Length: 192
Image (tube, rainbow, N blue to C red):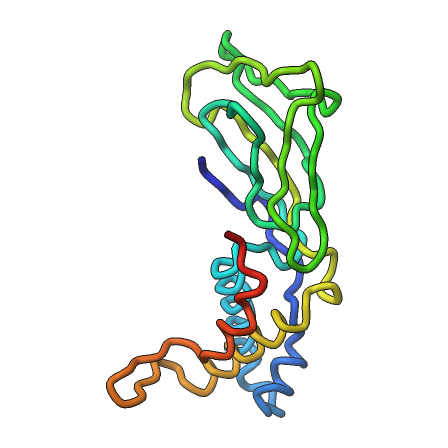
């Protein structure tokens, strides 16, 4: 299984103005740095939670169709764009959406999405090659307004921490890379 980003989000869950207010920055001198931290914080939160925060398109590549359901990572998944596969003759085919059904849980702590063939239909046969099946899907909360506030708070805390401490923080014999509050805010949204 391989997952690759096709199209990233067009904006971030927190605005530069929100970040500047949180960090108590009034000048524009560090806008580039804060903007980079904003992106890095979203990427960290997405990696830590296993969730897509804003709409983005992904390709999931499989070596063959599974025996059961295809489970899509990065909830919440909002749509399945296409399923393509390499047939036994070596030609790339697009599998009709009439042949499969999607289970797309929604909500702030939604589970992973699943795809199964409709009743009476089986997955098609594929050639025995790597990445024979590609599922293209869109994942992420609908807009920055629908990203849970706890996640936004974690993003702001991370950016503020990185802005104030531009290297690892040493407290006694312990080196901390991020504030404890960030993990506490994110755990309810972690995908297992």
